[in-house]
Length: 264
Image 1 (tube, rainbow, N blue to C red):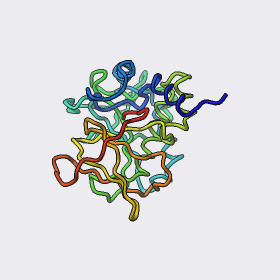
Image 2 (cartoon, helix red, strand yellow):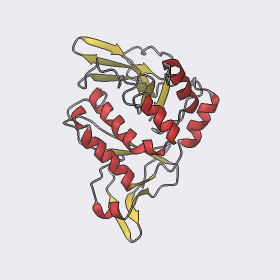
Image 3 (cartoon, helix red, strand yellow):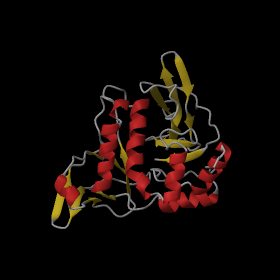
Image 4 (cartoon, rainbow, N blue to C red):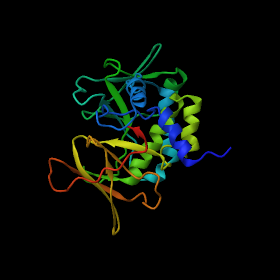
């Protein structure tokens, strides 16, 4: 059965679930319908500080399968507070199951790595934080070495997306999961915008590949930006330079109307 691009978009707008849950609360000015916003608020708080180890292993598999996107970047994960005022102070991680507790070292910035562990896998262990429920989120953290802190490589962002989708897609209902797949998947579809958070307010983000440049869309709250993950005319070595508002050196990038969006 033929499904038009417009009809598919309308379906996404009605059914969108933040499988790749936002790490910042939605701004009051976001244009999403109220019903969709309620879905984000409710579904985005499902035990982000506890995940089955077997599910996280799918992220390890995705990294191995798509490492060509960022061949020099190691796989790292991050714990981040669920709200701007949240803290990581005193946070710990363990792989936990009956008669099993394996500590996972956590860096001061919330970074951690996961190794393949057959004992934890066979025991169906969970990745557990000591923090209260709903206070933390996780994300993949892929950085090619040698780049400045305010510069992101597009292939790194694409690999982060693949890892997150691998881990979180099974949380979607059958219908919603297949809607995303029909569109080509969140990392490959022009219908789905994956929003990437920044640590402070952004003035602008510019992509550059050779002599070619592009001003990247930034959300109204200036806390997230939307890289062109799906657009293969921008190669993996494309660099995105982020200019923060308190730097005061670059004018704000134009904000265009969003399509269906997945918030990190």
